[in-house]
Image (cartoon, rainbow, N blue to C red):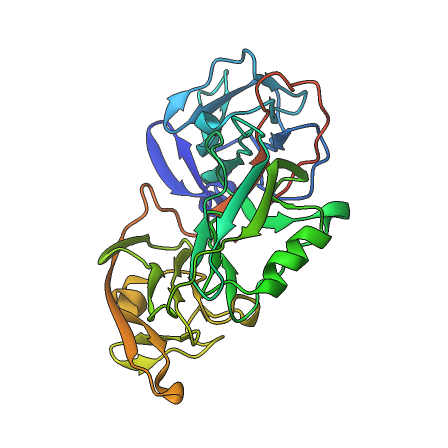
Amino acid sequence: MIAVRCHNSTRPFWDVMRTAMCRMHMFLWFLSLFTQDRGFSLPCEAKGSNLTWLWQHNGKKITILYPFSLGKSGNLIGRYLEAKHSGTYQCFVRDQVTGIQVFSRKLKVAVTAIGDFIHKTTIYQKVNLGQPFSFQCPDHNPNYGATYSWVGDRNIQFLRNRRRGVSPDGNLLFAYVTKKDISEISDSNGIRCKISGANSFRESGTLWLQESDEQLDPATPSWAIKPKDVEIAVEGSRKTMYCFASGRPTPSITWKKNGEPIADGINSFTILSSFYGRRLDIDNVNKADHQDVYSCEGDTSAEGGSILIHNISLLVEGMYNKVKGKEYISVPQASEGEKTRAGRTAFQVK
C-alpha cells in the first residue's frame, strides 16, 4: 500500500482519505510501453492545487537538467540515458499551503547498455578437427541487459547444437570441431558476434575457421566454462549459471541441487532445451528456496566415459531498499556519438 506522509507522520493512504486530512488525491504508478527515443517517462499523478513535484534517484534529489525533464503532470522524462542512470526512482508531491506530502512507491529502473565493438577486424582462425575450440566475442564496451548470438549473412544465426554453444557473455564454444562446422561458417560468409538489446544491436568483425594440418588425439572431457565455486544471487532477481563441457564424445549436462536433479519449470528454475541443458536460470531468487549447493555434471558414461562434476555454493543476498511490489524496467542506453539515433524503449516488468 502506498503511504501518505502528513506533518511528519506516516499513515496508510485510505485512513488519511477517510479523515480528510489530506487535500490531494492519491497518485498511482502504472506501467505501459513507451515509445520515446532511448528513454523513459515515469508517471507521478496527483490532483490538487499549489502542488510541487520532486523526484529522487537512489535517495538523492534529481536536478531537472539534461538528461531529465519534468512533464506537465509531474512525470519524469529521461532521454539518452547511460548505465549510471540505473537505480531506484521515487516521486514526492507536496501541497505548498498545507505542507502535506505524499510519495510513490519506489521504482527500479535498469538501463540496457549496448556497447560498441572496439575493433571490427576479420579473423581467420586455424582449428584442429576433433578438438575443442572456443572464441571470445571480440572486445567491446560494457553491456547491461544485452543478449549475445553469432550470425552469418542475412542475419542467419549460427545455431547451438549438442556440440556447439554460446555462453551468456558471448563466447562461441565447440565441444569438438568438425568439417561440417567449418563448411557451415564458410557458407554463411563467416560469422559475427551480435549483441542485442532494446531494439538495437552491434556486430563484430567476421570470424572464419580454417582446418589445421595438425593431427591430434581425441580430446578427453573437460570444462570449457563453469560457474565460480561460490556464486552470489540477489533476492527477488534472476540468477543465471552456465556450464559447457568439451570433449569427444560430447558430455551431456545435468543440473542438481543437493544431489537431486533440478526439474525445468519447478520452483522458479528454468533449463531451456535450446541451450541443451547448459544454462540454469532462477527466475525469481528466494533465499529460503535457492541458497544451497548446486552441481553441474557433464556425463559421458553412456559412451564408456566418466562424469565431470563441478559444485557451486549459491549465496543469496537481500536487495538494497527492497520494497514489496517493486517493478523493474529496462530501458535503452544512448551510445556515445549516436544520441540522435531513434530507438524504441523496452520494458521488463517482474
